Length: 535
Image (cartoon, rainbow, N blue to C red; front, side, top):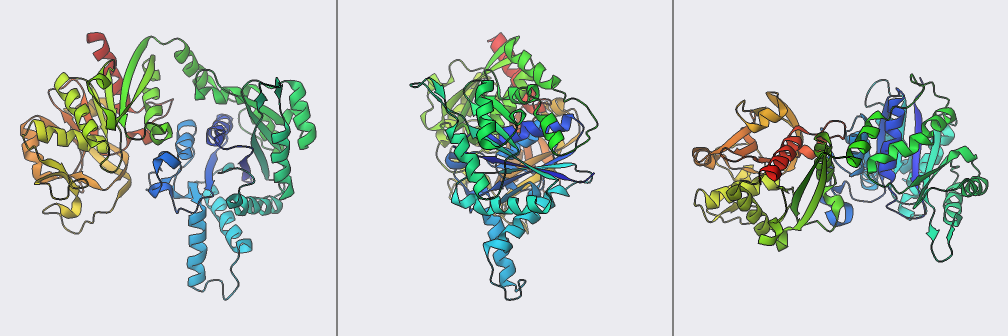
């Protein structure tokens, strides 16, 4: 079967949920038996989001092969089985960097290097690279970041125009727009959508399907108007109103309007299955509507004003709660403003990853409170390091212990760069990225959660637990329950005489799905529910 391509663009305003919509479309097409791949094209000039402020960009999602990518790849992972790798995300920075390096090497043989054709050719190459990540791919969904009309998106749109022109029967464009309701006028307005699709047509891209984000369901009359003025058939105008209960309603919305049928017809596909399977989403919505338990988790971080900074963490907590028929309430706690009142009413606490000094004291307070009061605690990456330093200070009486990230001169560097640790040779202090194996202690909570001896989890950090202190920790009830044996590095730690206090150096949130809650998150939520009942 010839590989087909769907290009997904956005118009009118940003933050319409293009990534979530793209993932939902991918899910429906997968459920029809098609094998898909997904690619996010980001127009910013950063080489990747790894150095970008979470307040601006949200979380950095990491793939098994160590790519630091856009958070939309987290949506792709949670909703689909698409392969995710360095080939799944490309930025303008990466594209231009590649072109300039080739020019410096003389690969263009003295040509004048220009956006067209050199930059657009590299963009088209990235699209093709994504299509061959795995054998048997039927369909590639390409999401273009930003909004039509943005100057930085133009090279991507021009590349798509060329790509479509070269494969006229194998490509379609889905354009996601916003249809606002003006309360004062009491009317739904289609003009922004008309202008946005007009902008696309002006650069040579004809939308095939228009998805309309709106506050409420659109009437047939409004859809007819959009179809007429935007030059598409009425059955190609799909509304995507705000969901009532959960983002996991989106695949159900799109399935009810037979978007997958429309796409299959447009691309002349012959999928193995005649209908999409939405049973998992129906079950999730039923659980959300009729929970048997309730649980409140305090998330202590420094980016709480921008919840996308912890997107995968929050979704993983939701997945775990859903798997236990529980309603989850997340309480966001600013790590800079932690007090005794912050701990009231929570059944467990999670300290997520992060970098830098801000919020350290509040996170240490959280770990100490959970350890002393026997409240479930889950520390991820920095949250694990916090757990170790709190233990060193208040159990081992090493009051000046710290991480060298914060205090390079600490006499007790519990957490440090590998290059700073004794007896470790030929290992730099660079960031550890991507999937690493981890051997589990059979007597640990981690083993009980995973029920396997070895796991693979994804990392994104520079600082590690300093093994020079390992013996003292173990003598006082601190269990190193997961080890990367090749580097002899701590991956999972636990406090033995505690109902549930676990820290991971890796990021388990990157491998959780609504259909398959991550084992550690499920174990943590289960412990928090028990705490609530026993408390």
